[in-house]
Length: 266
Image (cartoon, rainbow, N blue to C red):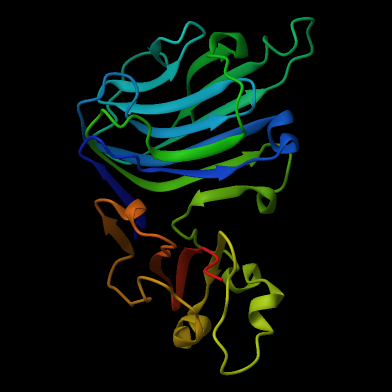
């Protein structure tokens, strides 16, 4: 069962969902993972995908019909390796960086793009565009002038040396076998009976069936949880709503799991 986000950008819109990263998270080996399918786009280079900024370099995974693109050192949109079909099915794209000790301040760091587990392109840090700005990772529309549609199953940032529990999922379909209830912070589970659960600013949780059953106690601003035959969030412009809570419900065996993001509305 696929759980996906659909971001449809018809031009003039900015549907980029961003999440801050720390200096520690981007200082060592890291990996961006995207499982997605391009439906259609008029983009030639930038348009839709995932973007990471580490404070010094600009890392793009942009979906085009003929492959995945990045911004090269001279600012030109350039394809990773040979052409590939991004529209035929969901594929797993992994961009990994491995620091290399050298005298050129990291410019020789190894960069690898894997597609469905196979190496598709090998580059160096120096091949990518330099930019000094806040450290973030984002996904969705990366160019308001492009139109099209990409469906995401997973967007994840992880430090390779760390355990999976230290990874940051921007989007998740709720992988099988995960301990959903264990990710709920004590501040939520210890809430006094009968009182609404206040999730706070930009928190992301998985919730098991027991919590879905008492979902009326969760303080929601928009989109109350609904059990669906398939786990789907569909909206042309979900970023228009203020303090919106995005959610998606999936059934994993006899357990229902919900992903949502809540914004502080105090």
